[in-house]
Image (tube, rainbow, N blue to C red; front, side, top):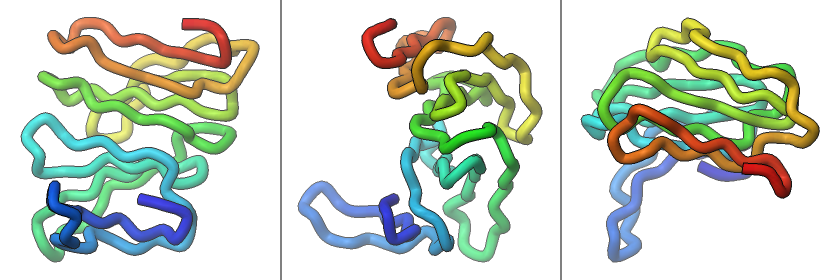
Length: 129
């Protein structure tokens, strides 16, 4: 993803493998699904889950009140987390149903990561983890 709104898959050697989708707004964060069959994207205030199967419609929903800066997909479940400029992080299922919304943090959420077992995650904002 990037400022041009294009989502592309590249090989390790730097060869373009495919363009997954083109949207009209910048893509700020992307994450693979555990089975590598979907890509989770953040664009503006919207989350998008795009299947890699050709001609398959993406699932998209408004997720935050500000830009979504980071997304992460649990390594062993259908849970995803998102965080951004609205100073909150949220937990979602793959259908776009919100399962949890944090209290307001002092600063925007700038980093998210699931533990390898998928049972916990870390959230960072400015100088707080």
